[in-house]
Length: 98
Image (tube, rainbow, N blue to C red; front, top):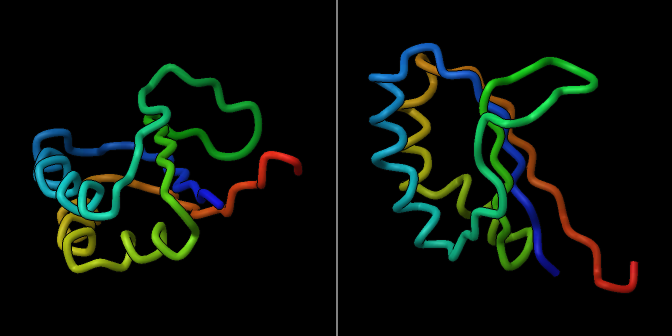
């Protein structure tokens, strides 16, 4: 059953954020991540507003968690920590009949 990484991000320093953008794809490739949505065209209807939104599909929940906790992603995350505000949630998908 697939799982999804839902990320909401507001970049405070685009130049420094590029370091994250250079490193993160390595982790996503390693875990066969598939980007389903990414961009700034969104409307927040409830809750805090962020500028960028990303929806990434993984083969399963364990793989999504493994990607987040992988050394490759943690290295990228260190580059993001002080230059962007982020909220990341990993959620299990539903079977087609659910």
